[in-house]
Length: 369
Image (cartoon, rainbow, N blue to C red):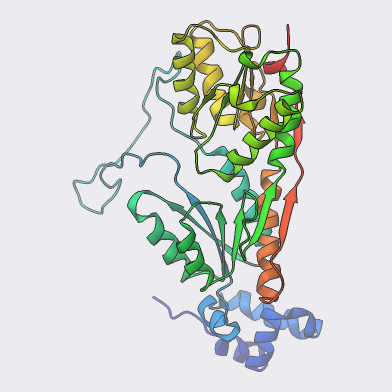
């Protein structure tokens, strides 16, 4: 294997100093156009790739930002290695014909909220010249995953409540931390969140109009979710504005997954009375609920109104289309990276809190007929 070219090779090939090569690669606007073009031509001809490790040592930065999410879904079943290099390793070839009429009975969980936040964070990191490292905490190794990430990045963007408070405090002593989702809790971290309470209040006011309290049901998220806590607060505010005690409204506990919606549908269908309107804490749960209700012959919205929260694309593709609160998930990811970049430039500034607006999207799943 040929030896990889070095910065010394580029300098010799272009007939300039090593310092000039460095300036072209890090501060190109500081170098005359003719010299810059000559150096870049040598870089291309030699196939030189700058060493990220070397740049990191010089700048005391890695150029990498971490984005850490908890693994809400159960650990997937993992088969033997697809390819091990051994002669007896399994090899998939050709095409398999699968009868999928009617759809599968089991559907893998998809964290579509995370997908959009990730896309926004990835775009902003790229725009600012950072590499994004993504970590998913699973099972007993979740805390070790984020600790390992902290040793490899310049800063960590983390979902609120994804690790215990004491672990978060330890991480923040090593690298700056930006917390995504949920309100500030008198801590020293930068926060980026959305108007959960305001959005849920506006939606609940619309859905609950003309209904009695016992005709409503709230299908919540996880008990430790700051997003769910704020959405529940908005739900309560809407009812209390009408003089209704929110504690009298039935609640089912969910976990932000489609399966939670399916379980709720089974429980409600087996009960004596179906609520007229079900306000779900997120879209995934609402979609699972609608799917399971309709499979039992319970119509949405004719028999029951259903709403969600997040605004994932799947809600707009459902039948009926899901009424929801669209939060700017991609902007949430972008804002988190912007705040992190600001923190890296000035470690001593006061903690920053950004709260992004939401939109209530009224669709067919809550249309009264």
